[in-house]
Image (cartoon, rainbow, N blue to C red; front, side, top):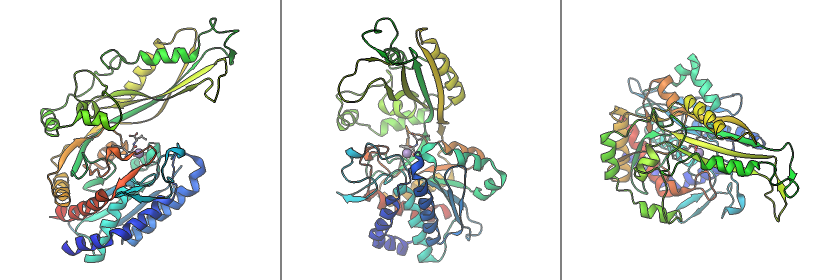
Length: 456
Ligand code: BES
Ligand code: MN
């Protein structure tokens, strides 16, 4: 492994050049106008898997965006690891807030800036290059490896979910452990494995008042204004203790285990610094819980967008016909998505006065997960990240969601290693997304060491 490590360190600059190429492809999965770029990106990934020495590299067409697969199964009697990642990215808007162009990667102050630099191109590229480095220097790998890099993660992985349910595909993806880097380090330079993700239920509600926009002078006072009503409704979704008011919302919530509470204390989270970093005087959340508990073990409800009426420059006197809000709920074990969606729908309907009509639409979602950390593969990953970062690995949960993780556990019956390499401060889904070069480098070493540790 020493030659591999030396080789990786010598080649970092080449890897970064290749990563830039990857980042130049605007593979936005949510917007139809990027369909060709998505296709191009899947071909780029397939090419990199081939260059890394993978066999049977294949691009699977789906109803939406292609899945890329590649394998190397030459390590007889050794475990098989499935490395998952996504090559699709979130839309880049608002473009005007980017300091450099989202699809023109730029390195500044030890960070690489571009949409997807962290989420997830930078993080999955780490494993492709680590595997390539081992292959080139030892002519093989100490483990069997399968890569699966998809193009729909940011829109809820609809095709992969279907793909996984097929018997033949399940055989194709059969493995002893799944390795994913699509989450965060606890802090810069701190090796981290994540053992939990929140789930998600994403809803849209639309209120309709009068059957057309009206003059707010001639009609204001006689009709309910859907924007006013929507604001009232949203304000009723939390109580004064920051708790969600939906009936039965907390009924199935699992309490944090004793070892977790101790662990959270050990992590010594600095709440004041957190508030300062994001420009607020005070944090907000459910009473009775620490910030880490709120982020990792408690469900939440947040408005993601709200629109209606006149929002252009200047003033227009109008009593609008419609108002819409997009609302997401982050879920934790053992909340059931379907039940939550039902309770939410019932609740918002009950809060709607007769003066307006309500339409409730379910968008995407995913189940929450907590992963047992005793598995051999997870222990090997903890040793690997400790070696790479030169520190003891910490275990954290995440507030974000990767819906496919639960499906992997269910369909493949394999543990999932969440080897987060990003930082929460790296602006994913936001302007000026970036990835620390230090994390990129230590990620490469973590991956190399993982192959050694898990093959022992
Ligand atoms: N990489 C993120 C998930 C993530 C972010 C986990 C930060 C932990 C910390 C992933 O690509 C993502 O954004 N997922 C979506 C899921 C949704 C689109 C179904 C999310 O969490 O909003
Ligand atoms: Mn994302």
